[in-house]
Image (tube, rainbow, N blue to C red; front, top):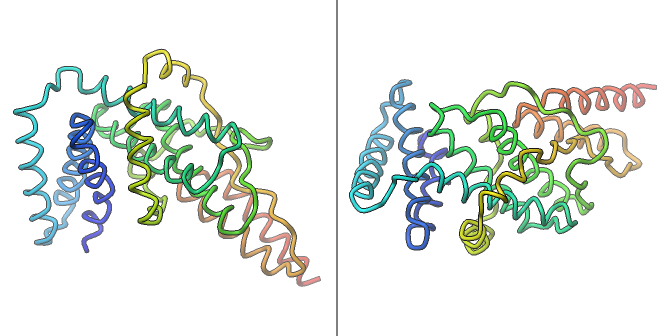
Amino acid sequence: MSAAVRRCRPFLQRAEELAAHHPVIGHYCRVYAVDLLARARQGGDASAELQAVLLQELGKAEGAKKSLDLSDGREAMESFTLGVFERVNAADSAGSADAGTASQYYVAGLFLEACAQFYGGELPPDLAEKARFAKYRAVHIRDCLRRGVAPDAPGAASAPAPQESLAGPAAATGAPAPAAAGLPAATGPVAAAGATASSAGAASLAGGSTVAAASVALPRSADPWLDAKKQAEYAASALDFSDVGTARTCLLEVLRLLDSCDG
């Protein structure tokens, strides 16, 4: 499968899931996917697969424009998106970090990224930080669940400061997709969050949570090599979200552990 087609699939899946109850939101997810495909073609991807998917989805998007009221499309998309983010962030802050929370963060990150279409392809700093935070938390929570440890709370001590500039929406796509079984379950809460999102709720996110540290306090094993490997994995996850400071911290810990092995 073409890399561009693979990248746009999550947005097309959201478009299909939301078509019945939130068609405007689903439409903008599809439009963003079409934009990704078009940019990939301009960048030299001339695969028949990309061309076929692009034409098919472009046709669907053009057809939807004839039946949908898009006069307040941007406001509707951002209100829905911030409602989804607010809902999962509140649950996470209350200590309800589980597989469902990770999936909801992942979906919120997708919606936030799709909002880039309203800003010339690059999110403004406030939305970019939320997108980065959402996808980062999705990876962090999944990693913790996989290792059997409790995820750190959002805004934990030693959290790195948000970066002033991000590499745009393309840099926010490093989170691996949640297990297939988790995605359909995300539709209900996502829809509910969008239906209840309000301007006041969105505004309350202006001072949203800072990004939690990737260098979580891992339980020490008897094998420093294993600890070093785990810290290296966290460094890789941090780099997926352009979190250079956290990646550097993790890598320094890797070096310290390796030095202790030599000693």
